[in-house]
Length: 299
Image (cartoon, rainbow, N blue to C red; front, side, top):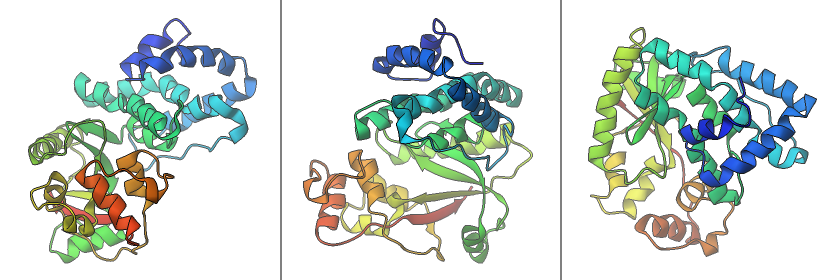
């Protein structure tokens, strides 16, 4: 299912792959196709993506050796391109609108931009993440992404303890916040959440998604001590009810990666151009740590 060299550019452009990466990816396709080992692995990885299409919690993809170089960094781009028609057929079978399908799958190109910002080269930092999109688990609905998931013991225990009728093992929607999509305004978030209620009820009627959850450094309550009460991040935090029971371990690399683009940047050199940059960097330079937050709200 891998398009030939003449067809590949249009497919990559449909997936929002940056223009500067198109020609190199077309050239690299020839190297992949001439390598029997790479073609063998391509077949197996595509099968791993599509064989459980639509099932929550699909399988993981292998980690490729450093010796594969650029082909290794870009290999999973070809995996997802080869799986494209399968996920499109799944979307059509669910009645998912073309615009939702297109914008969801275009996250492949956004993640290539994320890789270039962090590493200065083409590739995918976390290839497995894009598997959620191409297995039919995750959808872009306006400003936010929503992933079909299941409440675990800790989050499900927190919702049940609060009197919510959903508990461990029940379906939920994991909320994800992407970069390169403008401000995280309350209005944009509200539109996304409203769309999610309607979207999943219509296209996945067999599941009752009564709970939205989020696991993110953006829910670290320490942010509220640095940012104004009317900031978009603080207002986003207030949508969620904190979930207790999670082990608190420093996750300093997460805000560095998402705010500055590269989790390996030295703390002393982090810029201070925006309120969020100043909050993240100044807190770390003062000896503090950032933690992942965990919250939920009823849908």
